Length: 327
Image 1 (tube, rainbow, N blue to C red):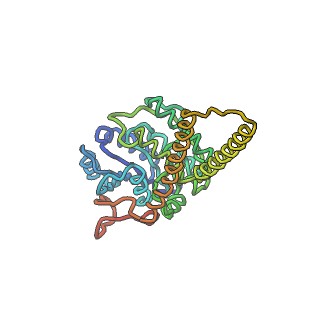
Image 2: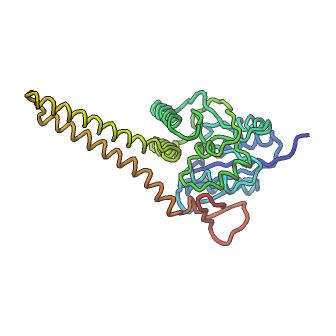
Image 3: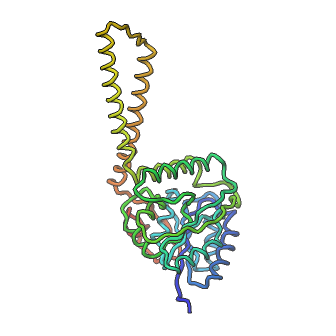
């Protein structure tokens, strides 16, 4: 007889009223088939449409549907981690409501978890409906991250995954605020397995979270949060330029002693000065990314502020979840 378990489904949402009915219909069908105790946690940034009202209407019919409301828009990474902090299941599945990631795949993820894996992540074998620019940025980003990162992050993956209670507890104890879940799960470790699938086009509306600039921000978080290589690159670049300058000086002195006229000219000087200035600004920018993240961590501001929690234990005041602290 299969052991009873509780499954938490965490869904970050923002302006998703058109997708909610179909998403819940398909998700609830899968959960019914799994015959498990469950909770569906919607982690919602303040929306301009009827997302909040619709979730509360569904909750009135099904108490296992819960809602976290934030005081302002904190973004998808913070919303996802908030749901993980609040979930009470033996395992947790993170999925978006736009149905690009099929809820039916949750069954295969649960099977992998029951086989003994702590993480079962969805790995895209095709990405229908996404622009070639986003696919290219994703490919280059994963290539760069895996070349220089201290943790392995599988290609063609997103936040769509199942994580066990052991992984959940380790994530709740991490003291980082960037919210790059793929990197955090890779850092935590444990046994992990891929579940391949074809990614569908978005059901309705436009993407509210993972637009082009958002994807770039997530990529920078992955690079800066899990690698010191960019800083080492600055040092290597400085050594290389110093070496070239030293050789140039030797050649210049030798040619001068030999009486050879060297027509350097203004264009040469302009090119050299512009190149060095660009490299200096790039170096300052890279260091600024690291310093900025250090500044964020030192301030220790809350990753998110919950203004309303429907379906959770009552609290005296809105939750202010510290980075790495328990909500």
